[in-house]
Structure formats: structure tokens, C-alpha cells
Length: 225
Image (cartoon, rainbow, N blue to C red; front, side, top):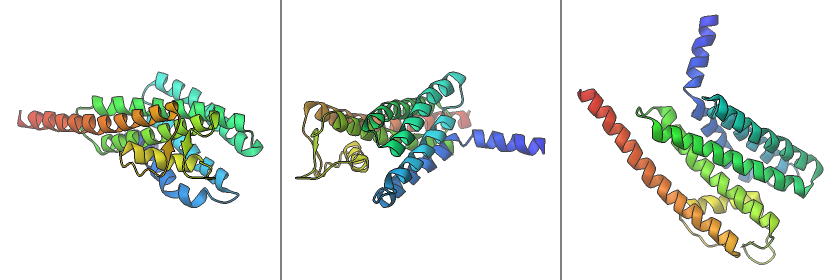
């Protein structure tokens, strides 16, 4: 029994980004269908809570990383649910700050692991995809925070109120440089964030492809030797 548990834990250790990617895909695939209606905020918070939990596990290789991740995830988790219960917008802004920092930290840790590996595994690939999705959520949270602090920073047509699900859509459209133009940054701060996201998305794809090709080359050379 003990050996079976040890093997399971060892296998789970090699699948850290599997769980994170699954929670990210679940969030992005399901949020359009659950965000509407009176129970929308609760459902969206449940999905984002899964991302927080699996994100902490994904960076649990080193104690320092775990400590930092927990210090960011716990306030984000607690403030988020308090905001849902009380409806206090100040709690929502505070939650956005911690969530933004958590997403950014997790993405940076994941990026360092992906770029630092010399052996490509399925978890490496899942980690690379997770970093990209985390980048989109990081910028979406930043947009939502800016709009909350300075209403009118973004425009989507007369009378339309932009919510976090709308910023998820806008973030990934910007990250992928699609530029549909249905949501427009108005203030200099909003435009600056959009520019930075476009640049980061383009650079990430270029650097990632180059790194994975180099790692594949190292593996081939090692096999030839």
C-alpha cells in the first residue's frame, strides 16, 4: 500500500501542469455559460478557485515558490469569496490585485521551468500552454482592475458595461493579435496595457518555439552520442 501511494505521488509530481492546464481550460470553456444569471459570480468564483489551487500545486517544486504562491493565493481566494458574499466592490479590487500577482508569479515560474528544461515531456508542453493561458488571464485581470479604478478606460459601445468575462475575451484577442476592435482602450493606461500584452504574446510564441526546437536538438545530439 505504501509503495502504491509513493508511486502515485511520484506520478502526480510529474503531472503538475496537467492539473493547472485542465483547470484553465475548464475556466475558459465554461465561463461563458455560467457567468450569466444570478448564480454567475459564484460559478465563476468556483472555476477561478480551481485555478488558484492547481496553480499553487504547479509551483510546488521549491519551498520558497510555494510560500509566495500561498501568500498570494490565500488572500485572492478569501477576498474573492467575501466579495461574492458581501458585494463590496472594494473587496473585488483587492482580490484583483492579489489574483493578478498570483497569475503573473505562476506564469513566470512556469516559464522558467519550460525554458530551463533540456528534456521535453508532456508536462513541459502542458506547462508552456498553461503559461500562455495564464498570460491571458493576467492581462484580463489587469484590464478589469483598471476599469474598476477608472471607469470608462475601455469602450464597447453605448451603454454596455464591461465585466471580467468581457475582459477575458478582450485579453486573449489582444494576446493573439487578432484585433477585432469591438472593445477599445480609451485611456493612455489602458492602451499601454494593450500594447504590452500584444508584445508579450508575440515574444512568448517566438521565444518558446526557439527554445523547444533547441531542446529537441539537444535531445537528438544526446541520442547520436
